[in-house]
Length: 430
Ligand SMILES: CC(=O)N[C@H]1[C@@H](OP(=O)(O)OP(=O)(O)OC[C@H]2O[C@@H](n3ccc(=O)[nH]c3=O)[C@H](O)[C@@H]2O)O[C@H](CO)[C@@H](O)[C@@H]1O
Ligand SMILES: C=C(OP(=O)(O)O)C(=O)O
Image (cartoon, rainbow, N blue to C red; front, side, top):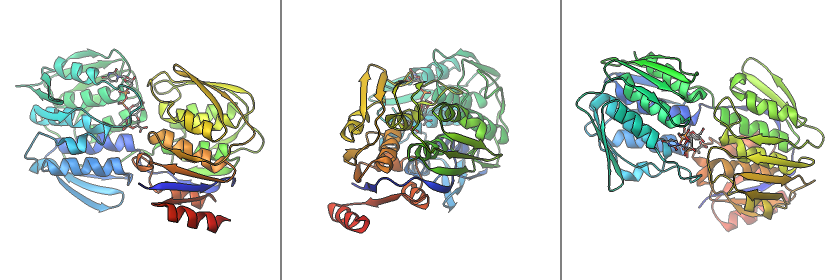
């Protein structure tokens, strides 16, 4: 199993380029199979979740032509099966989008219950409620969701909670239903807007994405398009918080500053300097940062996918901070790992109480999931001495060239596969 080995203590300084959003690209690449014409998707991140999804859609028969690292041409006309293999599904959460895409196009889908990061119980009842409202019969047998319909029809759907996945999934299926669908209490995340813009570029008729009421007028067919995925606000936020934690000075390029506002506001609140440009933000931090309180919320609130990275920054701030996780019940698994590094972090229910310390110390730790893994790498960049982060397979799900980008900012970090290489790194960095 690969690991990152890090020698901490260097402030991150320089410029970093952000790639396309994993969570938007996963929805868009799945929606691309809904037309029988070729679709070119640009600015996709080269991360393992995307590669797993592309393999899953190629195994059901879609043509998937990787033009280069960040561009893929997909043609759904050759799809021969609506039944997706568990091997792919168990690895990624977003495999649930295959339900909406296949049901919309073929009125039939067989997709095992999805995997993804173990950050909570993660039911998909709202997705299934939406499909049923559109006229589908949905059963779960031996762990496989079977959805089918003679015809899908428009419906008025009120989501019980704000769900990114359910909003996009229902939007996909409803795009090819007969008549009008209204989704109330819809998620407003930038990736919902990006998925809607993509579907519209294929001829769908979706209005209101980005608000909590989305109106979809079903169409019979979708057509070819060329589309570039939106920049990844979570990748951007991760580098912003890494800059803050290491008291560095980083220009984070190729971003939409509006998408980053909840994070920017917190960084300003704790004493960072943040400057916004048209498509970049610069973050710098000099002195000790201040405590704050943070609660994760659906967009435009503070994102749950940035909660672990925020906690690491607060571990080194002055005073007692409180971090409340309101979306997923099991997203503090990194706390014990941070404690090994000398952090003072106590978890009570959905709240972490963090007493900031002057410094962290390097230790051997494991990434429990994607964002917690990224947060632990940030902790390693801050800590005195050597940190080894095990199980980085989670981090590779969502960060392209994480170690190389950090190295370009002055970090001493290497991806290694065994103890011998860790020893070599230790000798190299002294
Ligand atoms: C692939 C992808 O895009 N993943 C993102 C997506 O996950 P995902 O789509 O799984 O998250 P949701 O927005 O659906 O989940 C929000 C909350 O609703 C609950 N819920 C959701 C659906 C449902 O049918 N029933 C239900 O109870 C969930 O357990 C959670 O408590 O949004 C999350 C919240 O921004 C992010 O952390 C994930 O990175
Ligand atoms: C939790 C995440 O991913 P997933 O929903 O795919 O597990 C994430 O992107 O932070």
